[in-house]
Length: 262
Length: 223
Image (cartoon, rainbow over all chains, first blue to last red; front, side, top):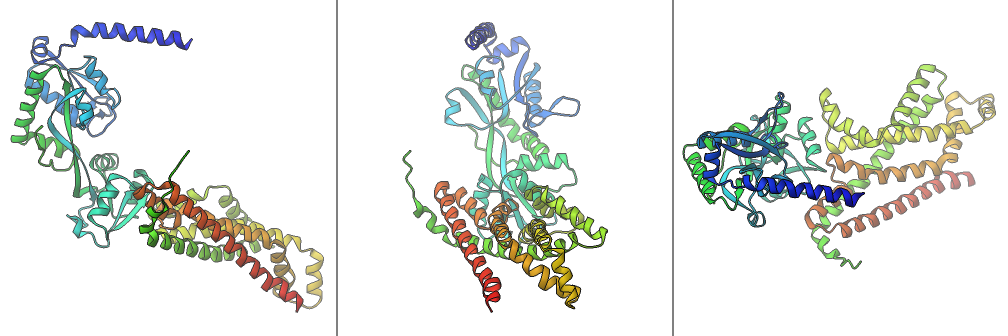
C-alpha cells in the first residue's frame, strides 16, 4: 500500500516537474515578456510575511515583492511559502524570486543565488522608553528577562556580565516575565518584540540597544544572472534613497544597520 | 556507548553550583517551617467544631492538592502582579512551596489527630486539663509521633520539588545546572553532579529528621 502510494506520488512529482520545466526559465527577459513575476513570501513569519484579518498577505517581504513587481513594470503573482519549502519552490521553477527572511549560508549558496541584503533581523534588548538604557554599559539594576542558552542570552552575558539577567526556560516564559512586570527589559529578536506589540498594543518593547544583526537576502535560481543583477541594482538604489531603511523601520521598529552589499 | 565524561569542564562553575546548593537548602528549610505552620493551622481547622472553618480548610486542601505545583507557582509569580502584588522570584517560590506543603502536611496531621481516640481526650479533660492543654499533651504530641515518618517523607519530597522553581528564574541548584548546561553543553556531567547532590541532601535531611525524632520522642519518653 505504502509502496504504491510512493509510486503515485513520485509519478505525480515527475509530471509536475515536466510541466514546470517550460516555465522554469525565469530570467529577466522571460519575466518581462511574460508580463508577470512570481515571488514567494513567508506565510507564517510576522512581521515579514503573514496574513492579516482579511486573510491578505502582509509584511516587510510582501511589501518588497510589491515594490519589485512595480519597478519591473509587471504583474505580481504572490505565493505564500514556508521555511521548509522556499528553496524547493525556487529550484523547481514554481517561483522566480524568493523573499522569505532568508539568511545567506555557503551551503544554501550551492543551490541558489543570493542578492545583496535588503533588511536584517536583529537581537537586542527591548523595553519601555521610561528606562534610560541605550547601551550595555547603562545596565545596572534593571532586570532583563531572556531565554536561557539562546543567542540573546550568550550575547547579553558577554556584553553586560554584571547586569541582572533573569534566565527562563524559553522565550514564552521570558516574555511572560516581561509582560507581568517581573522583568523590566526583555532580550530577544526584534521580530518577537514587534509581534508582541502587534498582539498587545499596550506593551512598550522599544529597542534599547541592538546586540547582533542577521541580514536577510533575496534568493533566485543560479540560472538567472540578469535577474540577480537587476535585484542587486534595485537593493542598491533602495539603500541609497532610504526606502529600504524606511521599510525595516516600518515593519520591525528597529533601524536598518549598514549592510555590506554581496 | 562510549561517552567521555569530562567533569573538569564544570570546575569554573563551582561558585554557581555552591550558590545553587545554598539556595536550594534555604528554600527547602524555610518552606518546611512555613509549610508546617500552615499545615498545623489548617489541620486544626479541619477538625474544628465550626462548620465554616472546617469548610474553608477543606477547600484550601482540595484546591492545592488537586492542582499542579507548577501552576500554583506561575499564579504567584506571573499572575499576582496583575493584582498589583509583585513578588521576587525567591519570595514567590517560598510562598508557593509553603502553600503547597501546607495542604499536604495538613492532611497528614489530620490523620494523626484522628488516630487519637475520643476516650483519650475525654480522659484528659476529666483529669482537669484545659482544652488547650488536652490538645497539646493528649492530641498533638501523640499525633505527631504517629505520623512523623509520613511528615518527614513529605519534607524530603518538598526539598526535591524545589527543582521546579527554576522555571520562574530562581537560581537554585537545578536552575544553576541548566545554566551551566547551556554554557558548557556538558549535560550528562552537570546533571550527574546535581543528582548526587540531591541524594546527599535527602540522606542528610533523613538523618536530621531521625535525630529530631530521637531527641523529641524517644529520649523524652525515657525520662
